Image 1: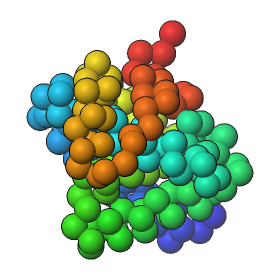
Image 2: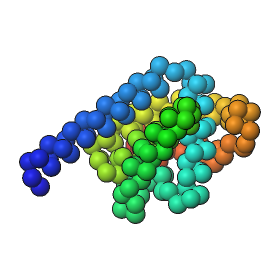
Image 3: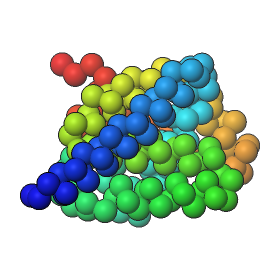
Length: 157
C-alpha cells in the first residue's frame, strides 16, 4: 500500500469518526422518548432494507457479502436530506454508522457508544411507533427494536 493510499484511508477514517461522534453527541442531548422515535424509525428502516437484501444486523459479516452497503446508505441519506425527509435520513444514519464498522473495525468503540445512546430509547420505541404511524400513514415495523447489531452491544460480556 502506497503512502498516498495510507494517507487517504486515514483521512476517511477521521471523517467517519467525526460523523459518528457528531451523531452520537446529538443523541446524547436528546431525551429518551425522543430517542425512542429514532429507534422506532431506524428499526422500521432496517426491516424494510433487509426485505430487499441488505444485511444490517451483522456489519462485519455483511461487508464480506456486499462491501458497497455503506456507500449505498450514504447516497440514500443524501437523497432523503435533499427531499427534506430528515427523520428518515437520521434513521438511515444509524445503519450507515453501523455498517461502516464492517469496513473499519476502528469505528467499533464509537458505534458501541452510539448504540448505548440508542438503547436509552428502547423503552419508548413502541409508543413512538404509534406516533410515527400517524405521521407516515403506514405501519412501523418494530421487529427486533431492542436488539443490538452483532458485535455492537454497548457492554459486551
